[in-house]
Length: 389
Ligand SMILES: [Zn+2]
Image (cartoon, rainbow, N blue to C red; front, side, top):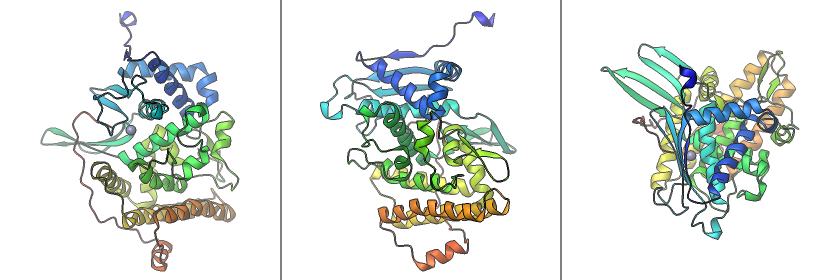
């Protein structure tokens, strides 16, 4: 009888007495961040549902001493996915240098964000055509093709996924464990619009998060100039799940990008391709993932030209979408002006951050709605059944 079958349970390996608290706090704070304090802390169904999923899908949580050689010096932790099960590898509290005292918690929040976003994502498959399907997979989009009777996989969305996990971890820490903050206790609105100011250390993640911040600005469905993400959290809500009613009477996520990152990466693709053309989202993401990996491996920064191309693409998307919103009565002309002004705040701060000159010619291209061609073809990442991040 299946009822009597032993339920799968996560195996834990700890190396310090505080390691279990490290994992527990990350689970609680990231859960609150994704689902809202009210739902995750005070509604036992949401908490228990997530815990059950965690126990069923996470085979092992291994917390090693902070200076472990299981992880390379560049790795803060690892979330592995193999044979349908998750394995979490973390740096714990043993042998922890005093100067790094908040790092294990921050790194554990990042890895926990990977796990909980993966477990919360819709797992529907979309069949594109014969032998070709797409699905959400560990916060990215996975395409499976059947070629010569073999499955060939490619996934994309790594850069978005990684930079957002940093942002989710920082929101979780700053709101629910502020004494552990390594980002100077920036507010949620600051974390979503400004560079992450983490101990004056600028990593690849911090650099690329500019594109993620622009995407958040471009996918917003809120036009109220006084809107604040921090207010949503202060009221116990989730910035990923809260909805707003628009002029057409329908409800939409307050931000399609935030909703998609946490619960349905393919939602972002559908929304982007709807306005920019089929396959455009994938093309952008493959280019971004390539720049991102090149930065991590070879310390090569994204160039101002590459950055400009991304800004052009996102701004085109934003403009076309806002035009559609106005035409279909979702927003008024006044709302649209507010939306543009909100978007421009992020856009202008990124021009400054990367010292990019936005020329009259650029502006002309943008206004004409000419699609920016990202010419450099990103190489499709082949992968086996294991993903490291
Ligand atoms: Zn990661």
